[in-house]
Image (cartoon, rainbow, N blue to C red):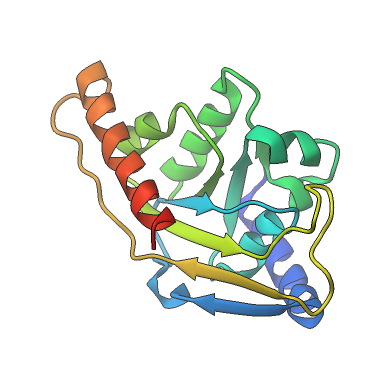
Length: 189
């Protein structure tokens, strides 16, 4: 498990390097809560999406990567490819994410994460959609060209409160639908 200080150190060291290499346009970083459990729902992919999020977000973030990007980044260091790679069925990633959220830390979710509704229901974490654009090259394994424009947009955080037992299937389905709708709304903006 990667600690808070390691995530903060990565952010402090990588942010100046990324800002020197790319034209980074960030919006809404003032909307990111500085304390308490937070789940960042990352929309957009590309080789630099994870390091960009970890470097630019104003608080340390632990990132769970799934899907094709998780396979591409599986061999890279955890700072580059995310702290956790979702390997189906995702029990380990869920347990570690739950621990981070219980400690009041931030977790970024990139791609599909089957236990997302469970994490929201059990921890009461705020969810915040984040849209990253221009973080990839022509191929999934290529970074963007130097001095190209990369954008990161933080939407307003949302509080989803479960109605009923957070372990009940109906409650998890309700929370899952609300989270899904938040993701769809972020994609259509």
